[in-house]
Length: 328
Length: 292
Image 1 (cartoon, rainbow over the protein chains, first blue to last red):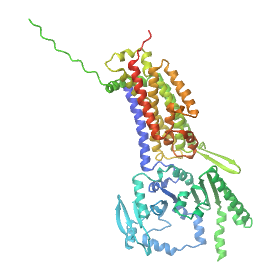
Image 2: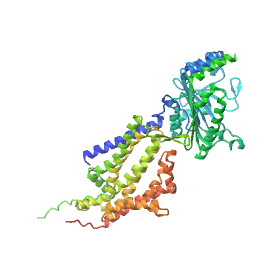
Image 3: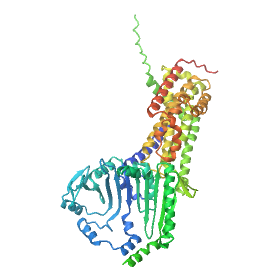
Image 4: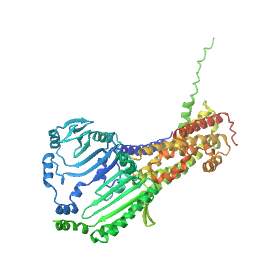
């Protein structure tokens, strides 16, 4: 073998190794996601691959938005409750939480909810608070878990399972069903998280753009988990995936999207939505304030996709304080 | 006076089949890699890389090439393709349907033919190694030569295309399947055309007729004829290697009459072994007459 051939083979092997190495690292870390909400890429690694719903909210952006300021002005919140929560846990909901990722996974006998929150938390105070209420501390694969009593959660009896708080990383906590929290840690360690679910990630990528809150999920799985009566479940629209996204600032804009099982189901759903839109337009003629909102509704979609976009302009939202004052 | 007996010189034993094959592999690899065919191979595998690069640049510049909007019956429609879907499509169209069979035919048929044409086959056949090992070593050189050119090209396409509305991590398993599928395809087509090269007088012509004539026609017609093609078994693995994407459902629908994963793998392995063995058997028995 000549030197030139050796160099060529080494070069080819290097390209192969670099590509495979990059893919392997991406596979194990769940990284290199082109998600617009790339800030959540790390948190999504804690969401198990079998999650039926994943939701995200940029809590900080929503709390700082003009919309919330107006709503707060129109409808004063129960600040006493917030202060009590802050005194006990050290968490100021308005400032300390940056964003949350919530998920719902299929458990053995019931859905297992999980919330992963990024922010600034006083771990000692949080741990003390849970311990005061009878919580126990345990270690699970290098993560510190604080498990609330099995049969009681505060003063409320819990039928099965228990609520667990886990310190995943500095500034990152998870709260949820114990089984869900442990599954979440396993998902991150085994790289078997939702980031390996291409179908779900494509929807997240798509819907997450320019949104500070979104939710993506399997409608059919949720419907099956709800154990609805046969008469009800047979009349549900044949939807496989759903996605909702919203952007909150001065106004509110958002979109709802559904992926039906087949083209016919999607066409039926589009017909239903068209009918409802027509009805809403008739109603809006009598109320000019809602006419702007109804006019902003746009039905789109093709094949198996049905999408509805809406915009609530800032001008409409400015009416909220006035309406609240008028009611007083 | 008596002459002292001269010391006997022992003749070293001839190397075994596999060690002979490896020596031929070592000898043939550079020759094969730096032949004129390599320019053709570079063009064939360079085209998808160039296309992927152009796509990436266009997407980076904001061209909506993966999305198109149209309105039908008052409903606006969005047609969308993702990076993993485009990658799967490129693997099928560029590599599996074209590159693999074409490289197989050009390199596979020339394994022995080049030595005959250059009149150097005598040097190989006068060595104390079996003729079958010569073919086996050349087949290994073909595999190394094509695999080390085709797979890096696939890797570059993967790194360029998949991140566009897709996830490198999420598509990694599909990449591994694709790489295995292409390596298997090169091995099987190489085995078939090594046999064609050893058996027929005009192997390149026979090979081209096989891939562009027989395989295309047999796959198009209903019935059992398609079972006598390599593409039938190879394309039977495509739905297992392609990403799950609704956009590709149409393409995957083409392979509805595909064999199961197990039977496709067993059939391909059988074709590989049988044709390499047949080619070696023919080379062992054939009398090569060099034109003066």
